Amino acid sequence: MAATAALIALIVLAGTTSHSEAASSAAGEKTTHIKLYWHDVVSGPSPTVVQVAHAASTNASKTGFGGVVVIDDPLTEGPALTSSRLLGRAQGTYISAGKDDVSLFMSMNFVFTAGRYNGSTVAIMGRNAVFSAVREMAVVGGTGVFRWARGYAQARTHTFDLKTGDATVEYNVFIKH
Image (cartoon, rainbow, N blue to C red; front, side, top):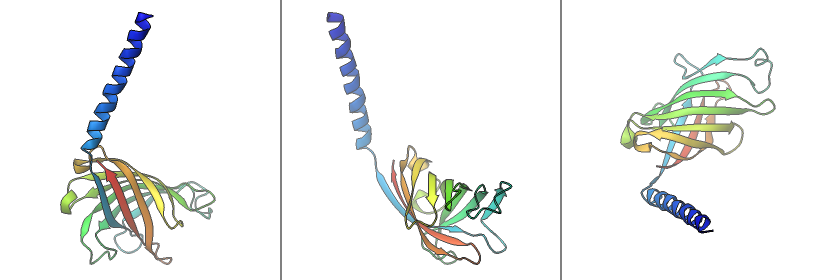
């Protein structure tokens, strides 16, 4: 009986210690909101998106199901690609993962090359249902200022050119770090 009571006390004490460590770690956290624009350039002499793989049925699919794309998209302060300040690049991949609707699986790093976050990255991953007004993806990590990052990113299409396939998407990224 005494051994059981001692074991319970030890478990409670261990649980209390872990909880207080988590509480003190959380107290030093910051939350950062970044608004920027992501430019997926398909057309022209210098595209920032390239399809690197596809299934035999991808071209016949109404959603492009199975297509794999690599990106190195500019990230800017404002929506105009040519006149807005370049903040960095979105580097990664997206895969057409929806068989019946246009939805992408996105895995990308926002690599900051200018401004207050220069040298830092934020890793974003998740489902992007392209024709939804607002799409939410997870912030799953980061480096530099954003080491230990977690949070979410909300994407809203700013412009999409049906002729060229070029898109500008507003991202609001909420990061705990």
